[in-house]
Image (cartoon, rainbow, N blue to C red; front, side, top):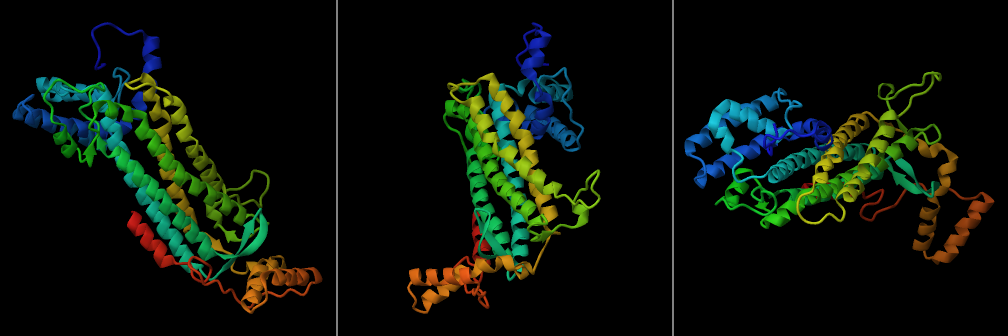
Length: 426
């Protein structure tokens, strides 16, 4: 069944090429298509395009379909083009003539739009929750290891003392920026496009404010052409927000891979979270963090994929917009999996509390020594040369303790402020 079917059979090769894998991807939209139908039916009754009795019958049928979807019993067979045609067919089978009226004052274009917007709203909410759970774990680890020193590196050369408190909370605070981007994406998709029809509105006396309220949108995309132009823009905005989260996860994964290596030996991962080698019995590989890095990097490529698909398209609908789902929908599931596995693995990770027992790290304290000399009254340039001479003649000694007191430093990491910032952003 096709919503545009006129009784003229379509060439099978054309059908296969144009439908693609819509059926598989559209299963993710089924819940939102049913909800969109319910909101639309309520509006049709309000403006008198269907009766209140037809509305009630339609809602009962759609709720039955929703129950099947949520139970995992909903499939889209090859005889249907997409989720919209399947739901309309099942609805008509359930309720009879009233089902044939559900498409009144709509186009498949704005059905897709409203489904995708509702889907993205839900997915952003779920991603934000997973980000918050990872944030909470990172802050917990930061508190646990706040006094354990960690060498800081620049150019992959030993630089200055840091701490695991700073390291864990650095990634936690980075996630706050990512939540800000997710909030921006949510604001973009939280606009009702339903009622734009094929992109130019409808001559039916529909009430778009009613459907906006029925579907729980914050506002509507008022201009019907602008509503149609949100196809592609909403997906790209979502992709950029996801890429921000993925960028944080990728860098985190890379750090952990380095720190777990024997050359660094900064962290330990329990054996049950590692994998082995087919020929080297001693290997305990951090595959989860390597895949976290790789999958996150793939997600970071998504905005550019979607940009290239939609770039320079004129206003109005174009069929290639359909393939935006092919990259976006799996990426959403991958990002959620990455956030979940990062939390699962990091909760059992432990740190080396005696890293600075290795003498190669003693020069990471040269800046602290230099700064103490400046505070005592020695000009900076003279103190710099004096410390350099100590290094050359082997007389440099490590300070007894770190004295970094400014906000966000080793001895004043501002954990409370970081937590408050997340609460305000979330």
